[in-house]
Amino acid sequence: MPRVNPSLGVVAMALMSDLLQLPPSERLALAIALWDSLDDQARDEALPVDTALCAELDRRWANHLDNPAAAVPWDEVRSQLGIG
Image 1: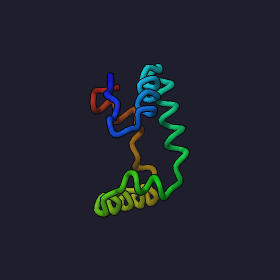
Image 2: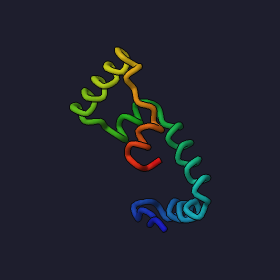
Image 3: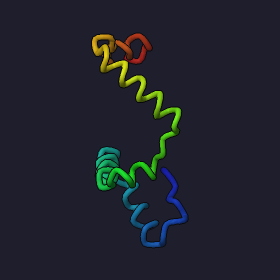
């Protein structure tokens, strides 16, 4: 089982221990709800993106917009990788 971050307060640690007992689907739903509760600025601060990575993502997105037919369906990628 995942460990509870000791930097949390005592009440938060107890709550986190209880939350970690939830089934995976409920923990995931909670994580998504918490993420969705953040505004764009809070998300950017929580997960800063390297400038070079951001530029690469922008380049790839522009390439896709220029030629969307070149995209490979996810099922095909998984098949080529032998994972689907």
